[in-house]
Image (cartoon, rainbow, N blue to C red; front, side, top):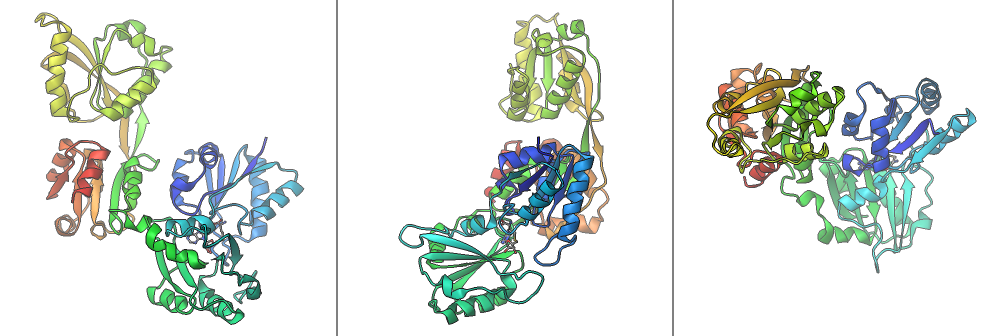
Length: 499
Ligand code: SAH
């Protein structure tokens, strides 16, 4: 069995890691990572996983390669599963080969999980295919960096004259002028299309295109920063017809999502998918509250009420911890507030019996009343016994409403506890803030100066997932609040798109 996995993290977009790479990140005891590996990926690591940053920007290595090699051997002795996470692909200018050889020399087994290289994915996200029928029949990936020096590498430009070969230079941003001039001097047409793509596949992607004769000036004017790659060849013109990434509807907007828990929020992924730049601020952690239930107790429940996927997860954990499973709930009906909760319940083998037409608590209570009444065919002497697993300290008005027509037992199965917050930037720097629960709103905004809250109203839109969250925001003096018409992530995203 391998001890060390050399894993390619992909070019920047966290979604471009391989399935195998992601499984290893989730399993790793220790992750040793580079500057170029998407930071979001580390959010999927186990909480007790040791994370070690070894830097490695173009030429300045935070930790010299020899030290990284030694560190790999040391950690392999300490742990079962060590992941060496590298930007792009492991072997494309990634020094993965050196690490593999060193590990083998030290008797440590390893596996390689290739990654999507920026050499191909970078141009692709700019709408440039590295090969194209009738235009380019091959592509060459070249380093623009000379080992241990800032000089120009000894590139043989005369060997790069084939107009049907696309050239991709990595680590060459600071040499773009020398590269372009070198190619022209060696005889490549000065009108050959060229593009420089910086921060490719990320929300900061910036593309500059021109020809060999003017690309260096254009890059300078636009002030592109590293990491960046240079593409040379007629395929660059296809960008006009193939660009897609920067044309997304939310491209250029900067958002902040307040989230609970370590894992990246699904809302963030959805907004990014539409092109937005999204930062996250973690405002809390979810902790289960263990409890034991007896079979008889569960068999006496007429209806289980779930208003969040977390409630389902932590209630079911307690059912299992009690030595029982879904069969102990076979007497009870299950009511869920919306599709996500329904989906989570289904994962435990239980299909919901009731789901309201509108996913908010008001509609839920109203429609559930009708459902419960017909459960006992209008028998006024029979009151349903309901169990309502939920978050401790949650102010659930719904309980009072439910008590009007059933015996509703509130069950604390998890807790949303505050955690230290790190605001990535000033709140007013964002085009919009997103809140998906009342507690997030309170935690993020309570300490803010009234001035900031007021200024936010002018500059920064405030989106809320539903009535309870909106009420909390209004209570904090935030106005106006834009509330999703459909109270889920999809509803929020639609709301933004309709702006
Ligand atoms: N193993 C990596 C390359 C490492 S060399 C891979 O396969 O992608 C580092 C160089 O890769 C950078 O100097 C830059 O030229 C390029 N690069 C990596 N990520 C990039 C990105 N997101 N956008 C543009 N260039 C990138």
